[in-house]
Amino acid sequence: MELGTRHCRKKSSCISRGFNGAVTIGTPLPLVNAKKKYVIVWTPKVASNIVLTWYLRDVGLLYAANFYSDRLHEFRGKVLVNSRYYKKWTEWAWSDVSGSTYVKVMRDPFKRAVSSYRHALRYPETRAVIDRNTEFDISKGFSFVQFLMAIEKVDICNTDIHLRQQHHPVQDIVGAEHVDTILLDALDVDLLEVLDHKLGAEVSEESSESVEEMKARVEANINHYVVSHHADYSGRAFEGKSYADEIFSLDDHKEFPAFEKFVTPETERLVRKIYEADFADMERVVASEKLLKKK
Image (tube, rainbow, N blue to C red; front, side, top):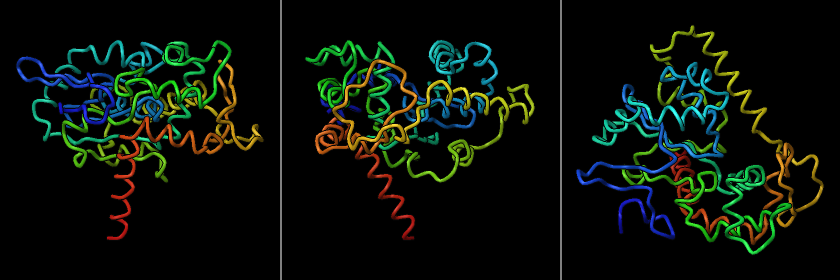
């Protein structure tokens, strides 16, 4: 079996090698810093705006990203990954995979599936994947069960990145044991602090802003993300026991049922089948943390 394909139901194009053996990795491209020798594996719908804010602050590009757009991912996708420095950094990282620290941020796969469902209700580009793989008319909306039935049919390694599995080809290249995975659901401190602790808190010398100015910029970016994209999943506005079969409209739902209100035997079966590799990754992290606590 080819490198990086064993976690997909269909052949993955996430990893390829050129004629000279150079590694080419598909999206989402990791965040690389060759100076501090780290690689961050990230996934949409997994605090990606917070991770990207931290990274851009760390490499001294947060001001430039804000100058370019109020959406950090637009700067990442159109400027950062096409830049000369990023391309050089990734070349250095893949030329010596043992020379970098690898950190991955992941989330409980069921909670992320609910977030991906809400994303598909909001955005027509992602919703098109559902439309192509369902027999239902979703022009007015669709349920979580219908959503899962649709993405069960796609190649979860190569579909829209907001639906794609969290398990990343980098994990197969360097080995899962060499990737330090941060499980968001297990954190009792701020994610920014965790990244500072693992990868270093010093601000890049490329930044012209003071420490206080940078702190204010980071806070402003996080607040912008919360206002623009975050939903209240407390479920206070939803009294029903289960919403797995509820047809939600195509809208930006700022209030949404609590994650557990989407859990049924059928949805749990589907999510575990679709995101099998992610559950394996999460269970590995949980087992490792339990082992450390025993010591």
